[in-house]
Length: 109
Image 1 (tube, helix red, strand yellow):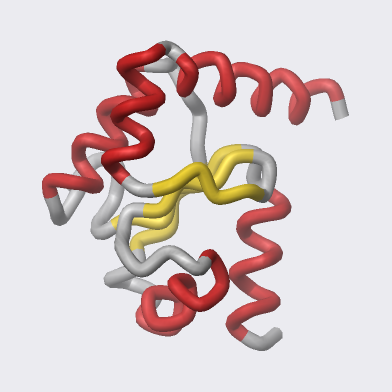
Image 2 (tube, one colour):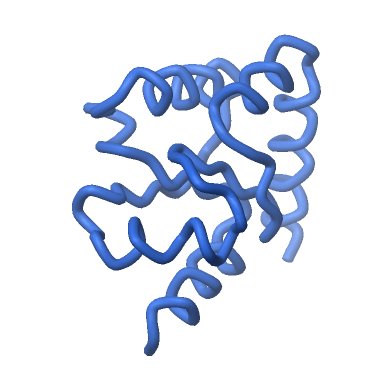
């Protein structure tokens, strides 16, 4: 499977996926840590991909998403954004609602 197909598969088969530096247990940058904290505060279950452990994904995800930086949060196959956008959505309460709807929809399938 080529890398773009692999990225597409990850994004489309996980209702909430975070491409980040490190892991939720050990984030390797402050932006990834803040994004993980926001997701955890929303009680979100999410899949993660450590872009340090997956260099091909790290190199090609910006072309796939048309977003140049990490972390990148996808919900229901669509890019929500990076840390600043996620934090804004968290502070407004939108993140909790979007993630909850995605997870409920996934459980119903």
